[in-house]
Length: 171
Image 1 (cartoon, rainbow, N blue to C red):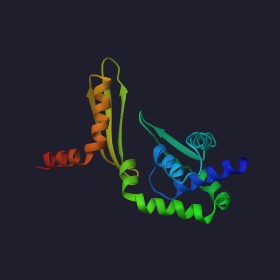
Image 2 (cartoon, one colour):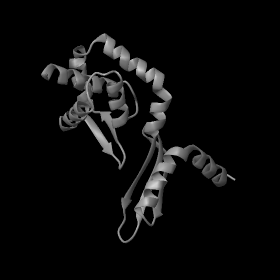
Image 3 (cartoon, rainbow, N blue to C red):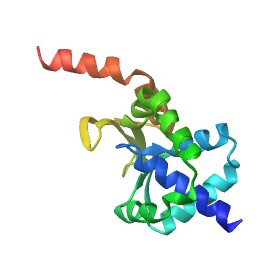
Image 4 (cartoon, rainbow, N blue to C red):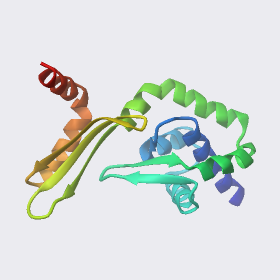
């Protein structure tokens, strides 16, 4: 069992090392489940282990967590990449080639909310390109349902909203 857990750890490190953007919990889990490498609970346990070992970092929002490999994780991967087969490495590379646009778009659009002192919520909507914010907009809404709706709608409609903002601001 320890060897399998090591292999899963290295697989996730390898995945995170293949891209320049963070991967979400959903993206990592979907890949591993689609390929039937292991089950959902094992993936979550491995992610937790990688965080506590400081091999990856996690940034959580209300609806998902994004992971990045740390320099220490990259160094560790350098030693242990032989724990996964060339076939698994090829599965990972192929997955990224086939899903590149969707993965980038999913991880470049952020929306989260938090309670502010007094009444209401602040909703932070962002579009990122690697480490650079293209849009970083914070809106105040009166209730949690509104905050959740803004988050969902930002993720669905970020591009037309961005275009409209730019059209208005650059007139």
